[in-house]
Amino acid sequence: MAAAMSAVSPAATFRIAPSILAADFARLGEEVAAVEAAGADLLHFDVMDNHYVPNLSIGPLVCASLRPRTKMPIDVHLMVKPVDRIIPEFAKAGANIISFHPEASDHVDRTIALIKECGCKAGLVFNPATPLSHLDHTLDKLDLVLLMSVNPGFGGQRFIASVLPKIAEARKRIQASGRDIWLEVDGGVKTDNIAQIAQAGADTFVAGSAIFGAKDYAATIRDLRARLAVI
Image 1 (tube, rainbow, N blue to C red):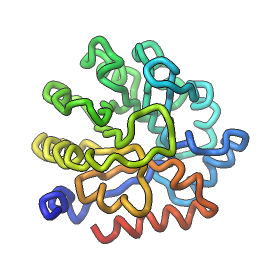
Image 2 (image 1 turned 45 degrees about the vertical axis):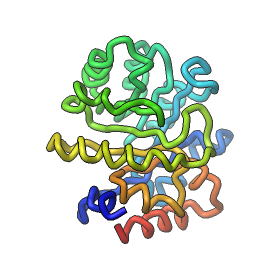
Image 3 (image 1 turned 45 degrees about the horizontal axis):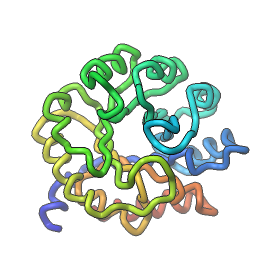
């Protein structure tokens, strides 16, 4: 544990990113306004195609409709295969960050370049069993590394603890690069494990049901930040 704790600088900036997958879709605009007022840093979009993952969620039209409703950066996680066609649509709809899975692209470097050409920050996403070796030739081009701590496709799953050493390894790679790259974790993030995830090296935390399933969004986000304050 001591080695994992040393992965995070005392001056680390932590970001909370509520996932709208867990929001009330009948009141989506109000839900976004509520988490922004509650102190969230980013708005996380889980985009699923019922092909790469066994679920179907939202598309660029939802992003475009919410863009005028929030000043938060919109963090789009594409669980879509093939992925290139839809990237320009999400960029046009107002996305600030677009992340994708290497398995969903025939040419990972080209997809990263496409995201940048569209004016967005680029992220690469790793499923629990996807090796970090994909970073060997891409880290110098990325703005964000997203590690899944559940198998993608559904919200509300339990955090896979075996991902913690992978978070620590990703943090080592980022530190060695000398670049300002966010390390985001998505899946089962809650108040009782967020500190452990941060100790492993994460600085950005996607939380769906932990926030939208709570009665008081602001109190939950304050609690998450309080757990991070001791790191």
